Structure formats: structure tokens, C-alpha cells
Image (cartoon, rainbow, N blue to C red):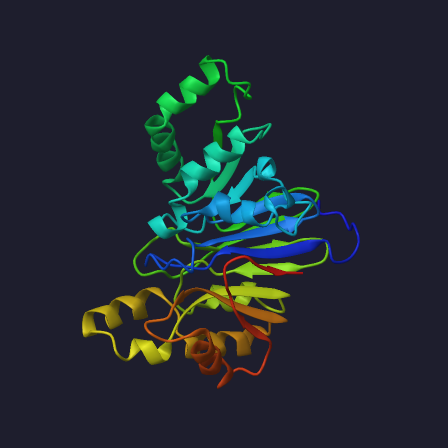
Length: 288
């Protein structure tokens, strides 16, 4: 059960706001929710652990309470590569940095097989570290995977987590998450087109983190790419409509498809139809 430990203990951190395009200004898609000193990772795109390390005091960042060795719990919205390329990093690097227990990953069908294949790929590295003279924990390279379904999927003293289905093309196992901490309710859309579950689970959330593409950029795509993105993602105008229906205290756009536009353009596109508080997410932003 989540315990009330006081106000303003939750921080929402955008580790990566990117997509499959290798934009050097936007790392792979990943969000970190920090409750006190306990971090929870949502998706683990490329560069995930180094992005987290950039914010730790150990590496000159502002967060004394964030430690890489404490990256022990992660949630995955779906198995597309831009959301999972950092899984090997998340398994191995915090272990090397002193993690004391196996990584727990909550994800859709296929998560277990993906994890087992990664561990097989890195078996020589793992065996060298645990069988040699390296002073390292002998078991915390392991991963405990949990297959998720819609509904409550996780709870501890800091956080409750609900998963809900979203519509991401024909992908059957794509999810969003609703996190409840002692002082915040945070909803993360994952990759999705507008759907009723997003509206229902986001009602009156403190923070809604939602994917977006530029409507202005969309009109310049080929017919084939228009068909694809319209079936898989959410436009800036559609996101404004979603926000008007669920009324978050703060709307954060991430996983942004710019197609030649800028932050300011997408912000203007959203604000044309939505008058609430909006931010275009940037890597390493911290929201208290």
C-alpha cells in the first residue's frame, strides 16, 4: 500500500524523448519516476542508463537521491525497438555499479523471451565477471520478468501501477500506465492513437505524458507514411482534444515526431485547441 510520506516527494524525469529516428538531441524513449530515493523506469530506449547517470550527483548532476545501483524496477509499454534497445544496459550496468538484487521488469507478452535472449547474448561477459576476480554481486545480473495484463500490476510503499491497453496499429500488446504516488498521479501513454482508455485512465491526472506528432509536418509526408502514422500515433491536434477531455494539471508531449518543425511549432499546434498547461518534453527535464 502506498504510504503518505509528505508532499513533493515525487519527481518525473524525462530520460529520453525520442523515437526510432537517431536524433542526437533526443535519446531513446524512457521516463523515470523518482519517489524519494526509489527510481522506477518506464521504457528503456537507447542510452537509458547514461541519461540517468547524467542526473546523479556522482556524475555532476543535481540529484543526490538518484543512484544507478538502485535501478531495480522497470515497466515496458510495448516491445518496439525504440522502447527496448537499452534493456541490456539496464540489466548489466546497474549490476556492475553495485545493484543488490535482480532487475524486475513488468512488460507485455514476449518480454520474458526478449530478456532471455539478451542474457544469452551476454553470457560470456556475465560469466567472466562472476567466475573471475571481479568483486561483484553474483546474482544481481538476473532478471525477473512479469507478464502484464490490463489492471493493477504493481504496488509497494511508494507507488501503485495500473496498466491499460492502448491502440498502436495492429500491435496487440501495447499498454499505457497510471502511476499513483503519495503526492502525484502520473499517466504515460506509451505509443498510441487516440483511444478511450487514455481518456478514462487520465482523468484529472497531475501529469499526462503523451506521445505526439506535428500536424504541420504530417501534411508533407507521403501517402504511405501518412497511413502508417495515422494508425499508430497521435497528432498535436488530437492530443489537444484528449487533454480537453481528461484535464491533466500538466500535459507533457514526448516521443515527438517533428518532421522539420520545432518545439515552438508543436506547442502552438496544441495550444491552438487546448488552453491548459503544456510542455514539450526535452531530454533530462525534471518535473517536481
